Length: 113
Image (tube, rainbow, N blue to C red; front, top):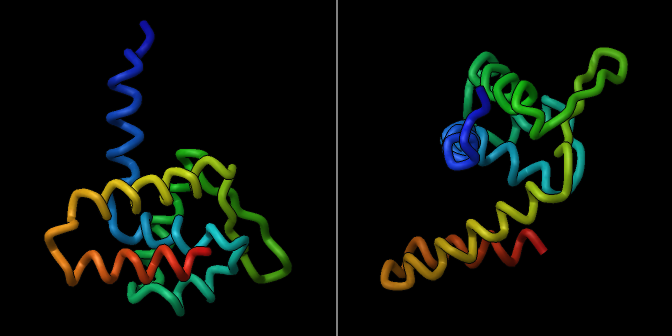
């Protein structure tokens, strides 16, 4: 029995539904990064980051390669970066009345270019 498309989409968005996972995807938009750089950019315990990276890896949204003792992560495809940009645009529209968060979103958009 196959899963309806709407259910598969809901499961996909649930998989994205964690702040650390979203931050990892944002950071990887600029290219592959070793775990140590992800840890430096995200305020989370190593075990917490490892757990969230495993979820992203199992879903196929990121891939990992080992370079000696270093594990490097990257987005599996360009569509993920497009999705993050679309989410930024949608949030910008939704939050136009909330100036502080809007300013933060705009800064992120400028930094992403």
